[in-house]
Length: 550
Image (tube, rainbow, N blue to C red; front, side, top):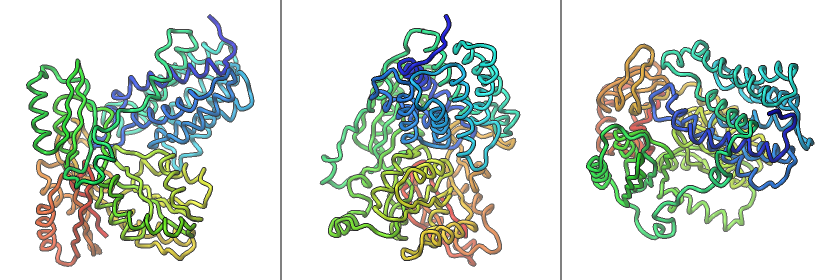
C-alpha cells in the first residue's frame, strides 16, 4: 500500500487515532513524571490539549486539509495546558502554517510541516532544554526531511520519522540528569510519539481506533449540582472525583468497603463504584489530599478533578465586587490582575492585595489557555497582568496574552509566595509597564518552601524516597524527606533561612488544622525572634504548607 496524498478526511482520522492512543497511554505517561510530588501530569495535559483540537475538528465536514489543519491549530491553542500541552499546540500551529491554503498535501508538505512545527515550538520556549519533547520532535522532523528525498510514499516518510524519534527518545536520559536518576525517558517526547503512531495507524489503513465522540464526550457532572448547593452552608468544600485503575493484586470488595468507610469519616456525598479493574470515586471533603492518599493504596489514579464548591457557589468573596461591577454596568477599567491559585484562603489573600480575577489551578490542575483568556476578557480592562504562580502554567499564560485583544503582561511567578510578593508591587493607577517592572522585581528575593507527600517510590539526588513520605521542597527542589509534617516544615525552613530574612509566612492547606498551624507558628517565632512569623489559611489541596521567606 502506498499513499502519496493526504486530504482533510484522512488527516482528521490521523489526529483522531493519535488522540485515542494518547488517551490509552495517559496513565503510563503520567507515571514517567521524574519527581514524586503530586504535580500536573504530562499525559493528562497533552490529552486535554489534543482533546480540544479534536473537538474543533469534529465540527468540520470537509476533505480540505487546510480547514482541518486550522481547526487543529485553533483547538489545541485554546485547550493547551501545561508546558507539554503548549509545546504540542505550537507544533500543530507550525504545521498548519505550511499546509494553509492546500486541499491536500504530499510527503514533502508533511515533512516541511513537521519541521516548521519544531521551529515554532522552539521559538515559544524561552530557554529550550534538550532531552525534552522539543528534542524528540526535532528528530521526528529530521527523519521526515531525509525520507522525503528518497520517496514520495507518505507512509514510508512517517515510518522513518517515527523510527528516528524513538531512537532519540531512548537517548533523552543521557541529556537530562533528572531523567537518568529516575530511570525514565521524557514524558512529553513519549506522548508526542504516541500521537504520531496514531497518524501512522490511519495512514496504513488500519481499523479505526474509535470515533470523534469517544474523544470529545463530556465528563460526568458532579452529583451535587451548583443549584442544589447554592443556598446551603457547605460543610465539606472540595468535590473530589477520580478513577482508581490498575488495582493492586488481591484488592477485593472488603478493601473497597474499608476505603469507602474512610471516605465517609472525612466527608459526605460518598459514591464508590467498583467495577472490573476500576473504582469510580466521588466525595465531598475538606481533605482532598487525604482522599487521594487513601485511594493510591488501591491502585493508580486518573481523571482527577478537585473543585472548590465554596469558590464556585460563594464566588470566593467576589460577590460584592461582582455586584459593584454590575452597578457600574461593567465599565472598562485601566488595569486588572488575573491570578492563578487553588484554595479559598489563597484566593482571599490575592483579592485583599488587589487581584480582581481568579483562575482556579496549580499543581495537578493546570488551567488551559482558553481558561486564562476567559479571565482576561472578564477583567474588561485595557491592561491586564497575569500571575501564573506555577512554572507549568507560565507558557499557557503567555499564549493567552498573545491572542488576547487587550494589552497583557505575564509576570513569570513560579510559586504562590512569588505571586503574593508581586502583588505588593502593584499600583492600580500606574502604567502597565511600570507595574510589570515593579512586580517582577518583587519576586527576586522570595524563597519558596512546600511541604507535601510522595506519590510514588523514587530516587532523587541519590536519596531514596518511599511513597507517602513527607517531603520538603525549596524553590522546587526536594530538600528534605521526613515521616512527620511538623518536622518537615521546621527542617525545610532551616534550609530557607538566611541572615537577612525578615518575614516568614505560612499558608496552611486543606489537610492541615488551624490549631496545628498556629502551634507551629508560635514555635517558629521563638526559634527565629528576629523575623516576623505570619500564618494564613491557604486551603490548597495536596500541600500541607506553602512557606515564604523574605
